[in-house]
Amino acid sequence: MTDKVKIHPTVPPMAGVAGRTSEWRTSRPELFEDKCTKCMQCILHCPDDCFIINDEGFPVIEQYYCKGCMICEGVCPHNAIIEIPTLPGGEIDAMSIEDVLRLNYSKEKDE
Ligand code: SF4
Ligand code: SF4
Image 1 (cartoon, rainbow, N blue to C red):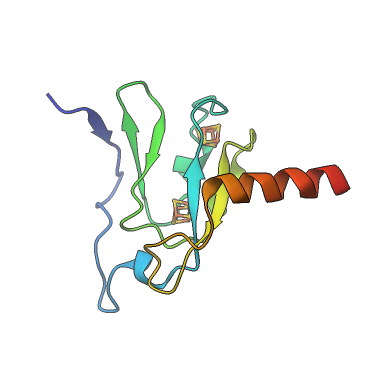
Image 2: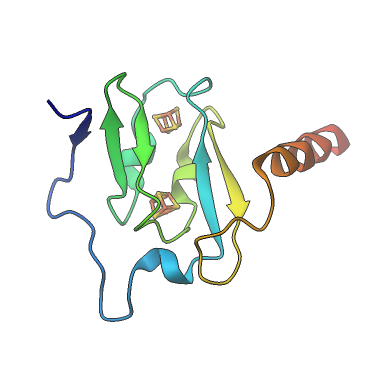
């Protein structure tokens, strides 16, 4: 039995001639299930079809192919996705999730 549901409507994401899209991204999305309402807006809008759904019905981002466009963050109505900067190569985070959350919190306080 599989623990994840594939939902790709056309074809699954794959590497192009320039390599995997995640190799040239400068940031990546992080999804927080405690804020997610399973509205599926992120899945509908991802241009690279990078989502699967886990056993609990939450979207899961396939970071391997995510190009970091952050459209999913923009369309999420519940701020359940945040942007984490990545180092060149796209694989390693340039900041910890905790630091990004702290920074976002101070920005909100200043507004
Ligand atoms: S950042 Fe872009 S490519 Fe990555 S999961 Fe979100 S919408 Fe898809
Ligand atoms: S758009 Fe936000 S709230 Fe809706 S399913 Fe995606 S992460 Fe969850």
